[in-house]
Image (cartoon, rainbow, N blue to C red; front, side):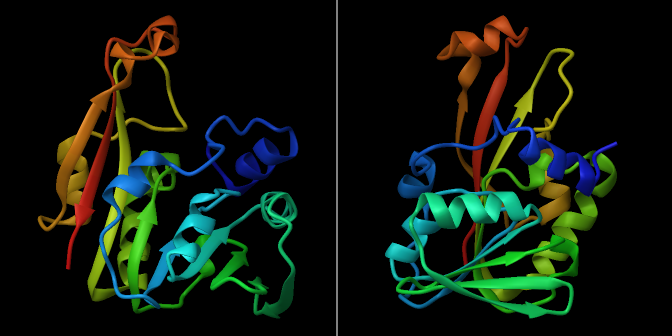
Length: 212
């Protein structure tokens, strides 16, 4: 069962294979052009440096992360000074000198809305099937009616179970609605022998976008 405790334990024991060093090249290639100052939501952000890149483009970035360890590592690794205040059950860490804040706590307790855009690299695919629809509904509820979305998904064969979970194309369209479009895909099993060794003939990473 994938629970909050599962993810907290992953961070505590350092089993964070989902974390990527550096900035995701697909973010740089496919992020939509938005007005400076646009508000961007990054759900289940971990300690991703993608948030630094987004903030450096001039966007108002809000990451939401359950693990206090991930938050501390992100702020420490990037040598960021910040101020913290409590807001209900959530802790808000506001970075000094960058338009960036990290909300520490359960994403489903985060209720701010009207974000101009959302970036999901590893959030939806971290959700088991039993909670995926709830996650998407909650995320769409945080976005304005004209918001943009950049989503990265995985679909794979074999006996491996997630996280990250395999989510097929039809499920993504049903969950996010008919405005979502796949704009790129790559079968990583053809380019990285690691996936072949894990028993995959298909390990497809796809990029999806909802464009206002």
